[in-house]
Amino acid sequence: MAEELMSAASSAPESARLQQAVLSVVGPVFSFLWRIKSVGRDQLPTDGPAILAANHNSVIDSFFLPVAAGRPVSFVGKAEYLDGWKTRRLFPALGMIPIDRSGGDASARALDTAAEVLDGGSLFGIYPEGTRSRTGLLHKGHTGAARLSVRTGAPIIPVGILGTRAIQPPDASMPKCFRPAEIRFGRPIYPAESTSVTDARLRYRQMTDELMFEIRALTGQDYVNEYATKAKPGATETMPAAGTPEMLERRSSADVLRPTGP
Image (cartoon, rainbow, N blue to C red; front, top):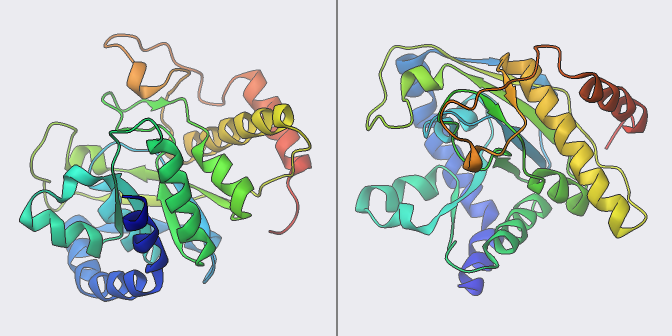
């Protein structure tokens, strides 16, 4: 399995060309069917690596994000998604790299594969919440995007995806056409060096909290300081629109820490 993952990542140029060809065909169709609006695309690099970190409300998010970005975007996805004959062809053409998540080292394998994609100069998409939000709330982020950024030097681009929950809610089998969607790209977050393991872990958490604050600002979602996988129905204690004083203070500190360039 490890060899398959390395092969998938090392073939990134070929995959990117296939994705670009597919995007040139399906992009206009998607934009017509769902009126996809892209805001802040100038925040994306015209070439070279970047981590697109977005909120996640619908399975269709991964289809809309590359269309809005105008560049191929690779994602890591469950290998089971490729069991069907349709998805076996469609998902890789749209940038999905299959990962076997049955083992205990699945997270490490996913990060290794993502790092290969970024080292190849491509865009990589990630959902810090770890899974789709069942309630539409924005949940606490996992630190994978921050770890990738520090490891590869690639900037994180916060992304706010709006409208996809109405197009295809979590339990819906098919998307509703002729509904609007908007993809908003925020300003890049650049990695900062850590001098020890303890400092690194703290920086991962700080970068992730800053990222979720930016996504919150882009989407207007209420924020829940709880992982989506642990969220319980009815547990909807949220943070105010402007964020908590701690988040605001952390965001201010991040402005000081962030360099002016990659």
